[in-house]
Image 1 (cartoon, rainbow, N blue to C red):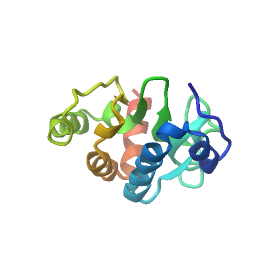
Image 2: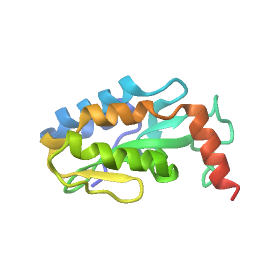
Image 3: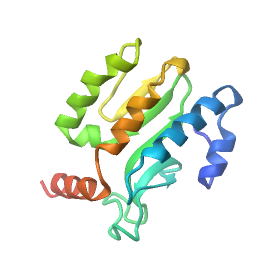
Length: 151
């Protein structure tokens, strides 16, 4: 279930009503904690947090017309999903997140490689998500991205 929109505000406005408040709160938490160099944008048709072309002109290697993706949120059929490429690419950051999660949430962590699924919307650990967003600068992400890309 994709939320339609061509701008960040359109995506936020088109989230299903029963999820709109929680989705907007998650977006606000992420934006408040985004380090300098990242910005909210449309990324692969969804709400993403990216390194814009003005900072990283090469863009995403799979599709250079897209800015370098870092994180994102989506309203899916059974959950709100949070994506974070830093935890996918940095084992220490992943370990930190996995160890901190139970301190912030009673629900078992439901996670893929870079995707965290929140099925119980009242259990979203906003503070933890905010802390995670602060843990990697845009330049650290670019350096990590380039080091993984060149392998």
